[in-house]
Length: 262
Image (tube, rainbow, N blue to C red):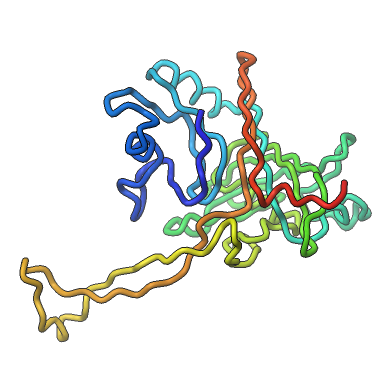
């Protein structure tokens, strides 16, 4: 196992072709140049935490199957906007659609998710089955309060029962307690010391009429525009319990330890 920091993608994607997890581990010497390493599951680029790697294809397939069948008990930490305890104290009639309280002090979000923007990969939640043309998938997540954090925020523990893309992010938004710095799902873009905003350069070729300069290698001169994007969000995979009894855990990040009281 390794603990992946935020901003590092697991696989090559988009503008990330080389600076992904396994190549970086090889570059650091953590993994031998010729050693076989296989990923077993996914973890979003913006999410930090545990990643399970396998030395053989057989082991990778076995663990991947456990993940795909939701047989691995996963626990995540998140820092969310608002007082989560208010959700625990409100009357049932005030709970958001698709949300119910459990006897163990947790809340359960149950419903369906579907993609609304395939280009950027953005998802929506519906408590009821939406139009089947949207290819909805069933989703369930248990969420419990750990404690309060500064600035009117809360630290929560999330236990997804299913494993859909952006599931925890979407479910926390449905709870009206979005991840505090997740501006894609109800939070705010924040230049936090532990997860600063980072520059992202978008290069675009000049319009044909203005292409009067050509680089020495024959390539068109292009203009660039820089914008700031989050290096990560307050979401951390902290433990996995496998069906064979093996368990993995890691330390909580600094943003999750600023709990004031239970």
